[in-house]
Image: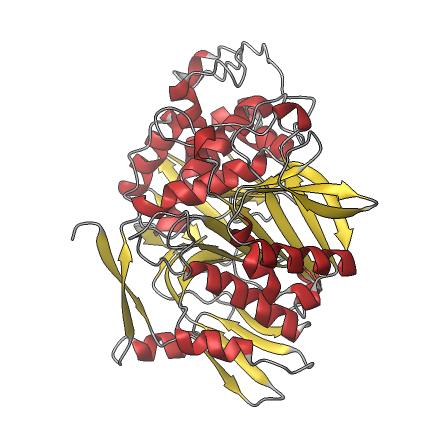
Length: 500
């Protein structure tokens, strides 16, 4: 059973408290955080302002994670959903066991009470008791939510009873998660209907069953048709959207995303977003879109500039020909477009971005390109490669990538980017010393001690290379070594000096 592994939770997820003051505890396992891996990371402890909407939204995600659809792939294992904490929101993602539907609930800043959200990603436990309890939440008072055990509980659970589950090998669901993001990145907003019309559409979808339909604009609303038209939003299997009934009473509007009209109906891709108070529930049907994958089975590596409705106008060829001999093979030459970029260069760019990203809820490609010292075109290509690797997602509502690390524990490949290779060597040699309180670091290299600190959102260094380029060519190897040590644990760590 090489394709099956086990995952452990400190206890089952559950709804406790009273009927008028429920407490939802979601237990985590196998997490990735800015400071490295964690067995049971804690992301949030606070209240959700719209308790019933939050409960049914989470119930919808949990339902998807345990539902087989008619045209899906039979025999696939159930995969526990994934939670991601950003500074300003929580995201809950799920795949159906048949890999026929992707669901994501985004609880935005308006949906939480301002309590701190800790960054990171992890699986969270879903069980039958939790599903029944979520369906019974009726309180109009704020729902208290805890995501992940607090530290004392996590420590006590190491020696106590726990919940162990068998899960599929990481490679099995990764492709499907990546496919959903690639599909969403190629869609644009095609229609939005207000609450009452949205509820009528959801009820109509529930009566259709597992048939191929198109949603068309009719007198300011949306109708369903079995005949395609240039302005219609395709739906390969109406049964996929049955889960929208869970949240129908709380919807303020329903948004439909589809391919540009010029793209025709190849792949029949679409995304459906229920707007709830302080949150959004997004559904991406995956049945029928596999034809959009490339011939080798991978998801597309980057949105086409012509078909991506959100493509920036600055994604063009850059003829920067900086050939600084000090840069070695990392020359920074960007004389290529997304279409003809060197695959090896793309992989190295993706490696570099993966170090610079830290669970941003909305990635600005232009700002990230400036930070990395590369063009926006190369940055977009690298982000698409990170989507393939499960390290980025795509939010159609904001037309932006977001950073998260799917907690599938794939073996970390050896770095290929020259500066990352040197940075890893520095970490392994114990050359990095961190001061975690001040966020500074020192790196000993070639007989010199370099000082790293963060200034205006980027890490600066006292080395000659940084002084020469000032971030135009991206971070130096010492700055990358400091980041790697912070995430993976340095050989040496110096605590901040205590005041007398």
